[in-house]
Image (cartoon, rainbow, N blue to C red; front, side, top):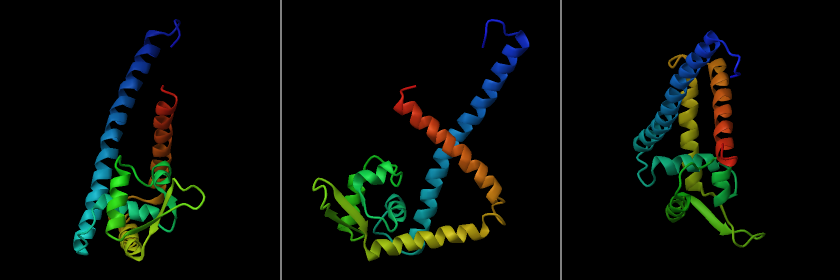
Length: 170
């Protein structure tokens, strides 16, 4: 704001900032709640299928790995795993037979992971669940492609903003 700003301009800027703050804090709350709700939906599906060997975080990790062969570090950098204890969950998934791991031929320090048949079954189960959701999202949830397109664009911009906050210490 310049020193030459008028009182109405200052008032409008303050009001706009308060309005933005209201929506920003609501978005923060919704993002957190939606992630927890997604994990609850996945847990419910695991329970319905009597899959008690893994938890919803691990199942979502399997879904995100998909058909790829990745290092543990790539799971985080590519956004496939959001938690802080990726090595613990990978170890549990390897022990339970959902993920196969082996040392990289190129870089012996790296461990490559990929889904086993058992892991692919969980991935397929979640793909079926999400496809069922797609069948009723618009009709029941009243959320269509246009709304999702706008929402996703806004969330990507917020993500970029937060990444820059950390990267550039803004």
